[in-house]
Length: 307
Image 1 (cartoon, rainbow, N blue to C red):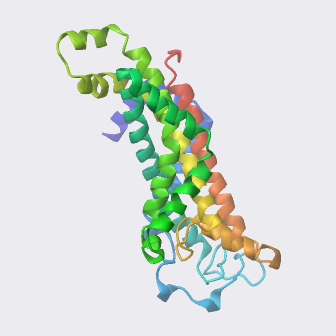
Image 2: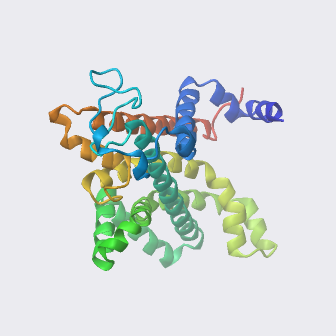
């Protein structure tokens, strides 16, 4: 069964392009290994950084196993709280991936809806949506996310904000990324709505909602998926940046951004591994997603030549 699915995928243009691109194979392999490790963190990670019973302050600042003073129980050393670096990175990547996927899904849903309706309906509605999009595109993503987080902190209490920090992050990043989806969707919709199959759909009496989301949307998914893939890497970096600045997840939550933030305080005192390994892990994760997005941009190009 698996072999049959593999053969069918390989016979497609996208499958042929994927398996003949070393960059696509390597980057996707790295990403899926990280994804599976974070998804099954409870099985893969040797320790649970959320479990106080598995954390001891006596183990704090233990260097990596190959360094002098290293311990065989901690492959990449421990942080200032005595948490195993390898375990916290795995659990931290889970948080980054959850925030990244959820925020991009939110941004894609909002952006695609506004873009496809603006392009199809047109008129004053299109002008309003596009002007809002243009204004928001002038504001950097990190500043918009900081603005949303600041408003959330002013509206809700500190204790409640710590409990809802992940949801605030998802909304803040998602509301910052939707304009890219809206602009691309609107441009693609303007092209599609003038084609003959859309005119035929109107003639037989289909509603505008059915035409937009059943007929137009499937034909404009290619550029949307490319933007979503590249946006995922940007969302993960934004989450880590906000956590590094102290406005992301709570300090007690093992996130890649919080690990780099706390490790940076001990960088010049000799405990370099606390910030070095999470930073390298974040770079590898973001780079693998970006390279996969670059391949998708070429493979999903409608002008791609068939073999």
